[in-house]
Length: 325
Image (tube, rainbow, N blue to C red; front, top):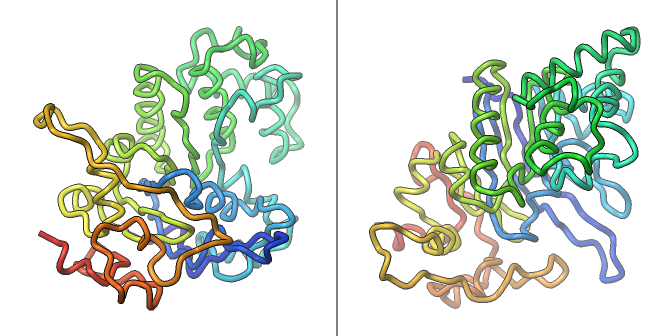
């Protein structure tokens, strides 16, 4: 299956008083049409900066310094602002974190969906856009979509606001949807409804999805492939079933070990000591080294690169072969 999006050597930096720091540093990823790529990792590992880089929404003092973002044969990193605006929201859409802060409190849900549609169809009448907006709300299973069209964000529940964000993102039938923590702050029942909705819409439209989250349970249910990020780099990438069956990077092992298991209710959960290092104070060699229980002196010598260990499994760890079971 041909890849819709291919990212090669992406490096996004921010200019600070401490100098230029890379929030995304040499990332290689791809996602095929109709497939879901899960991007996981702790807060601060670069997931959201990666998504904003794809959308070309990095603002000063940040910038994309190097790499390619090939979308259906076009390098998004090389497009002019006008050319990127024609793609953003139309062929590539994004669901941002925290719908309460992403939606404008001064406008109704319907007005904001209409605005997204009008940006790519200026010839449509207001009545036509209104009808399309109500249809979009109905499509995302919003209760009483005509009434929801008139509501302001504060008059809606968290799940309803998230449905508005999804309706807005899908209003122009994008080929790629980037969902940045789409179930954050939602209770488990609503979370299941939102994930089921995304699966259903993907099956219906054939769009690709990049699902950014810290929740391994969500990607286990949704993703065809998973990329694990740490300190701005991808440290492991594999098909979902392979990653859960045979994690090969100590960081991935730690993430999976922190998940409670029903069959081991009396056992103690593993914990990864410390925190993700700030991008302006990265350790030498492997960036996970200070937190890794398997680290050796040689791990400080060079940053390990992703290497293929099976036909669909890549890992960036010099010890991965000895750690695999």
